[in-house]
Structures are given as C-alpha cells and as structure tokens.
Image 1 (cartoon, helix red, strand yellow):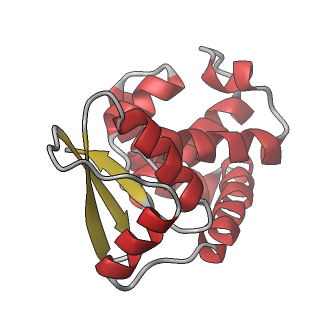
Image 2 (cartoon, rainbow, N blue to C red; image 1 turned 180 degrees about the vertical axis):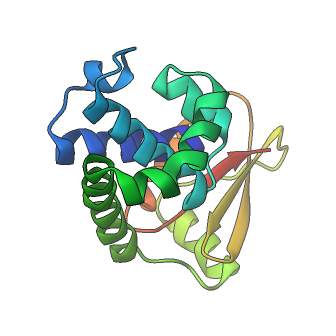
Length: 169
C-alpha cells in the first residue's frame, strides 16, 4: 500500500477503537482525547511504518512540525498522562494484532509471479515502475501512465493479507 493508504488505515483503526468520529480526528479541535489519538497514530506511523511526516501532516490537517512534537513528547506523555498511555496502548495493541496477522514474501520471483497470476499486467514499454516491498523483498512492475492506478488497485487487493508497500518510481 502507499504511505497515504497505510496511514489512512491506521487512522480508521484508531477511529473505530477509540470510538470517535472521523470529523473530530481530522478537525482542528484541541480536545485532549482527540489530541492523544492524533499523537499516538502519528508516533506509530513514523516509528513503525516509516511513513513520511508530510503524509501524516497532510492527512491529519496539521503541519509537519506537529509530527515532530508528537514524537518528542511521546516518552514523557506515556509516563505522565494516563489518558495518553491508555489511548496509545489500545491503538498500538490493535495495530500489532493486525500487523502480526499479515504475511510477508521471502522471494522476489515468487512475489512477482504471485502478482501476475492475480491479474497484474506488465507493459514492455514502461513509463512507470511500481516498487512493491514485502518484508525484505522487493519487486518491480512495469506499467504506463494510463494504467498504473488500475495496477495499484489490483496489487493492493492481491496483497491485502500481506504486509507490503507500493512506491511509484
């Protein structure tokens, strides 16, 4: 999945687990419980998923400096704020449960053949390369400008039970 889709999935999980509305999470509200959720998902996204701060800031409707603030304050807030600690633990446990249930590939050739058997099509005259990573393995799918978004959708569906990232090269 792309960084944006990965982060949106983490946000959706937090919305469901913490029983808040999407509007609240992405609004400018400064309610402490909402701030705790934002800080927790931002910290998880940057440390666990290595998601870009720009992506996190864009989706949360914040500036990039907020993501640095969340990371810097995490340790102190975890030890001093019961609300933040409980929120973080609840979200992190759910994140780990989902993350550990997903599989990874250990061979790039197998991953590529797996994708091709599930409807992914490669173009000979590639204008765009899709880099798919799963675990320590990566493979490339060559496509063109007209079809790459369709191929990303097919790859995402094929790898829904696999831990993966997709980057457009």
